[in-house]
Length: 348
Length: 251
Image 1 (cartoon, rainbow over the protein chains, first blue to last red):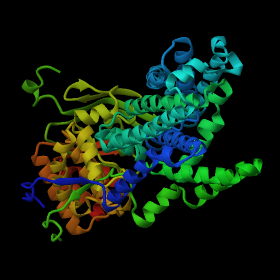
Image 2: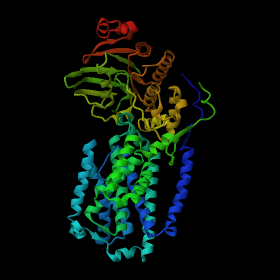
Image 3: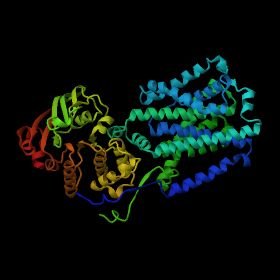
Image 4: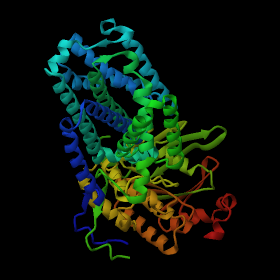
């Protein structure tokens, strides 16, 4: 086994599989179709699609946090609400264009996430989860104290600000729709690029075994803090956009644990946690259930719970995990494959 | 840290200085001293539960000792986190394999090489493939690590530790379950690794593989080393026969 002389040739490494080519093509086609939605869909369609994009983005970010970095936060509504409130503050009090306020709210929220991380990272596991929730509640209470933004009952964007974005209502709808689509594409693309990099390998290693990761040179804590801050950045931008579309913000809506965390966890878990495709599948399932069952009121929520329990019992890796195991499907090319020349196959 | 080269021969690459560790009432280590010379291969044996793996935890930084110091090339690393120790040159394989199950075998090595070995990802590919070749895992490079058999998982432990480009390699029972031919291949592989200048500490129950590869043997029992020295002599010593029943018969 000594001195094997195969070292001469360079090792060729390719990303993805046959399936991921199919996946990339499908993504491109559907992206074009979705970008053209203003020309084939009505106002309701655009709103529904925007909401779907927001949930895909939120769930993908939560998946990055919980599924890859192992940080099970139940307090991401802190950043949805923070982003929303920063946007309204900038637009109403600072006179900043709401469109510029979206990236700004991301940056400011990421900066706020740094001291928050220093606080919640003292806690582990369940305590971390509870800690993040408490942070979100503190944010909600703080927001309800800001009388300039309407205190506990919230506030609306001024008509002048709204008209400033685009002169007609239809143009505004189109504009906000395209921003929502762009944002989810940017979030997904960033996550794909992150996971393809060496830091993505580190994240997957942490997901699979923290002990082995730390003993193989990966600074687990620093990686987690970075993911937490990046996630806060993305989540806040999505939050800002959600409430820009609503034109109205209030503490209870912006920091809702139900809307921005419980549903997001549901989506990620049934779709497949720790897999980038999981949140997309999960969001589709969630919206199909919602559109068909929402009229049933409480029964709808019980059905959601039932679906969650069934999926967790039968396919703990989620629906996408099931498809991966059955068919080896892969939409996003994330895995490094060694391309073997004719040698080594013949060996042994 | 300065002047390391001039005293390289005198300063052991790794040293434990009066290390003590207990879990509740169970004493794992009581003021243990241990030195590993540069390029040396040291074997550790001892009954189950003697604390051999705990020592590896203390050396690699996943456990902190109750008292005492860990020295690497003369520098005190007792408070240093595991990731930095690995980047510095301490590679560890786990007794119960901990593969990165959701990644391919090749990616398991790439991540170890990129972070533990401090390489750029692309520069790591070639050496990772070479290591897989040497560890008889090359044909499984694209397999998910979670789909490997126990034996291959053990190989992966060794391969991944090698990918971090260690100066000190901690091997925890890598020979268990190997056939005689595989065991010979492993002995040769470890000989190769030693030739490249890596110092080794090897915990092993497969004694014949161990003594074929090491310079020195220590026996851990009741929180201390009860015998130390030339492997053959240590194995024949009455203390070892007394506490380590069965070894003589097996060997």
